Amino acid sequence: MTQDPRIPEAEKPKAERRCPICGKPATETATPFCSKRCADVDLHRWLGGAYAVPAGDSDDELLPDEE
Ligand SMILES: [Zn+2]
Image 1: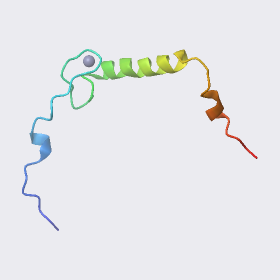
Image 2 (image 1 turned 30 degrees about the horizontal axis):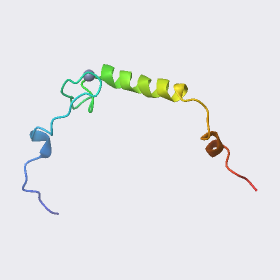
Image 3 (image 1 turned 135 degrees about the vertical axis):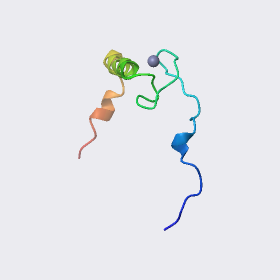
Image 4 (image 1 turned 45 degrees about the vertical axis):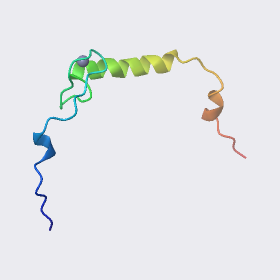
């Protein structure tokens, strides 16, 4: 077995991350967001955006050419 002489990374403050939703410092529990709430907001953004995307050429990708 090999021993790691280094201090656990968890003890160090990670590179400062900011919540992309509200700009507050992110927490470890909800990283990269500051809270579960903001994570939820981001998720809804994604879902909302997906629905907002108009059907276009990408439709072809959903229908693979079968022989
Ligand atoms: Zn936030």
